[in-house]
Image (cartoon, chains in turn green, blue):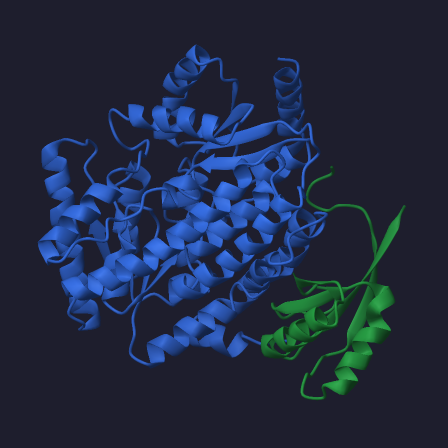
Length: 87
Length: 425
């Protein structure tokens, strides 16, 4: 079965997420705001999905902007199998 | 991660049951929305709203209420938001788009009630929707029998005001609707303690027309040969319009349109070039009912417009901004709101005219007629719509389906055959 790997930046609140979003935009890093996958946190809220190849660049931005708090960057390897629609 | 448990507890939400909903949404949204390729970047705002669907906006409403403002929940595009906003209150469209709420709904409404009404019932009585719990008053209307009876049940739980919409559009019905708008204005004044003046109504009309103009601009971008936004993304934007802050929503949607218009200039679209262009007509789709759009767009089709309440019915008609007295406002609002062609009216031939006009305006190749089980009015109108479309040589397929996903494969097979037929025309 094909696997896909995606990385998510988690935040203590959406304010931090939106601050990082601005920085990612300024630095031209591709991202998408996404609901936080359940396997990473049981609280409803946003995370930022990035390509695993951009993790280091994102870490650098975070170290330059200590005001932006995160709950870490997590990568999940998921079976590409779909749960709701099998097409 | 943001923790809204304290907020939800203050709203008397059943945390354990509500958590089942929170557990499903990220993956469900992820599968339908996040897998799309070449999405507009500005969709990140709407991703944000959905990700925080029971948090961010609910917190905003809680803060407003702390400051003494009121929140009013609505279910229908006939309820004039202009009155609510002019009374310095917030209007939110309420939860009704998931079968998650059906078991609780069936405790208070008959099993053979349409999925939309049953879900709304379950969301309220099961204490699993923070929006219902944020409302100081609900506003119902007499647009179908299931809803009429639902308001009687809701009255046992919460304050509710019901607007009496006539089933016809004769002169006396316009006069009746003006009277209903006046009564609603008085009820809102009583609730908020704010006097609704002609001036305030002019301001709220302008604010809400700006929101409608932004949505019109969005839909305009879907008319081009290869639209720069998917149908399901456009649907999401319209769904969010019902409960987001109107000024912020307008600003964010205009930003999205800036990006979409640039995409059009660059010839950048999201569909396969030969994708059949589909106009959907029928019942409204409340979040998270994205099923039909998802099936169409994973079967090679492109949804280019919706003749539904979560589509053009919501914003295609602006409110005339020239009123200067309260009486002018009542008349202008009544005239504008009664332009909407819901299947609850008899006769409702203007809806057919709308479908034909939209089919041409959006250069559609076919129409998907969507109904929910037990929605008698929309199901019954299919016959007249089908006959009228046949005269115009417009292909149409009828899809009746509830919120469950069991029939998704079967619908896909039918739609693929329909698209093939359209392609061979």
